[in-house]
Every structure is written in structure tokens, then in C-alpha cells.
Length: 128
Image 1 (cartoon, one colour):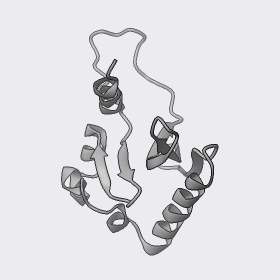
Image 2 (cartoon, helix red, strand yellow):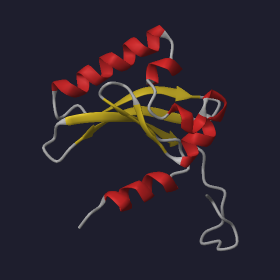
Image 3 (spheres, helix red, strand yellow):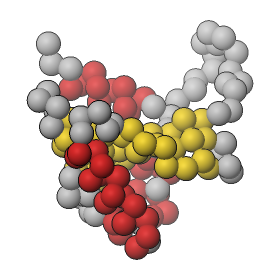
Image 4 (cartoon, rainbow, N blue to C red):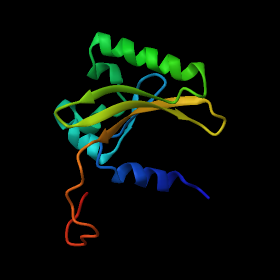
């Protein structure tokens, strides 16, 4: 079974921004939440561009170090990068690997700490 359309749908339905990069640090995909979140920086026009254009020199060095760490072992797959107090979320970098467990890229994962405010099974309210 081809899972790619299902996997894309999972990413697209995530309320958190998902920006996927290849090993050359080029942005290869942004979900709709990421396009909206980074609209002032270019939104969808960032696809195909270097992630390094969006960060300072110190951040770029850290990103390079994390990706090198991902490449050292197939056990190195996720690392905590910071806590965003304003949005009350933890942020991680996550390795992306192919079927052979070869590193192919990475993305940033956001885990919000705020409790959901929607009512359970409220069909009248859309969350996305």
C-alpha cells in the first residue's frame, strides 16, 4: 500500500507548523500551518530555499551540529532544542530516515503544552 498520500495528509492536518528540510538544508515542504505561520517571511515561497536564510549564524551552526549528530547513529533521531514560553511549547528537531534507515532530512516538531479548550466531539466547531 502506498502511504505517501496518507502521510502527507497527516502532516497537512497538523495545527503545528511543519517545515521539512533535506540534508542540504533546503526547505522541501511546508504544511499549511507553516505557510501561514511564516507568511511574513515569504510563506510558500520559502520552499526550495535554504533554511539558513531564516536563521542567524549561531543557529545555523547548531542546526549543522544536530544534523551531524543524527548522521552518527540510527539511534540519534530526536533532540530537544528549546522551550517557547510565549506559545507554551517544547520544540525538537527530528531526523527523517528512509526504509534503509539512511538519514534523508529533518524537521522541527512542536509540542504545545496548553490544554485543549474544544468540547469533546463537538461537531459544530472546526479545529483546523
